[in-house]
Length: 422
Ligand code: GLU
Image (tube, rainbow, N blue to C red):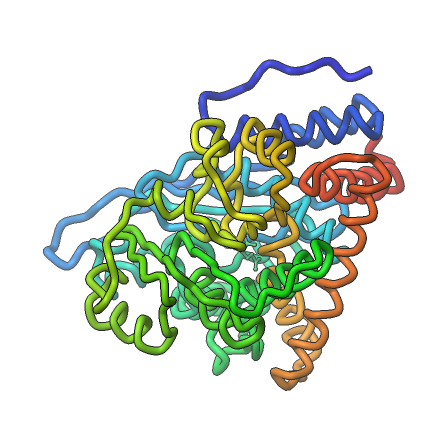
């Protein structure tokens, strides 16, 4: 019998990830040594980076790379640039990558990296120097067979391009396979740009079918209008015929009961830097957005936004988690008991890492697929994982997140066992 462990940190995401693992481990009666191995990252590196700023000063940044578990294959996961980054958040996110790649049955492990910085207050040149310095410090720790980073919060294909270039210089040869989410001209994959949102939209379609709902004409709200959130808007309209009535970003939240057109809103965001102030929209609060009467709520920003405090007031029928870790375990139970259908992050946003994996495959054999092929393969992978999670939730009579954990932890534990780790 596993004992409940006391939290190791004050960090909500970290504690969430530990509680989720504990719950799954208890249900499948995971071997105690395997459990202890999975509670901690196998490796982590803390780095200090000095960057010459445009005004001639030198600024010092802290960065991290956490490799949670590589039993099933090389570590995989994004790099975040965020002012509130902490090592504990990265630890949680690295473990979520282990579970995500396992749920998708990709031959990969889990990792995550980050730099404490505010990219919005930095020039392009400063960002380039910061990104290059990051890989110079971590280079020997990364590589196509060891650990492959990718974009995440506030990191872009251009940043991936600089990192691929710097790593190639370090290797004395082109070695673009060290990172995914690259621009197409540098070995990126067709279809990587909208892959996270696309995978999530495929899941929403399957969830709606399970609930006997037709998404066409139904309302959706999107918290976060970055890569995943903005493409979710586009694809919710294009693939599901939904109406997106509220969206937000770090600067504000807008609402229009008739729904927003994608092209016009994207244009507004590009010119003004925010969705805020879009014509014919009312400003609402983030709390109001999360609690709107919608069929689908897409949390597509940061972690721990749906908690025991607001969960009782959430009215969405389906929560499609495009962000990592948006829901705390207490909120999970409240929502499950209310009958809200959660498509957990490990599944809902796994389209991104799945197409990253396709990018790795294409890089390693130097032959690139058409966008249509990428989308078809993604759709198939999402469908299989969706069905496995659904089936597991019925078998064990648990909510979808716990079901996703059960699928993932079993797979990772099996690989560790076969490798003789316990
Ligand atoms: N950052 C994304 C995630 O959290 C993508 C990771 C990847 O492509 O490796 O899943």
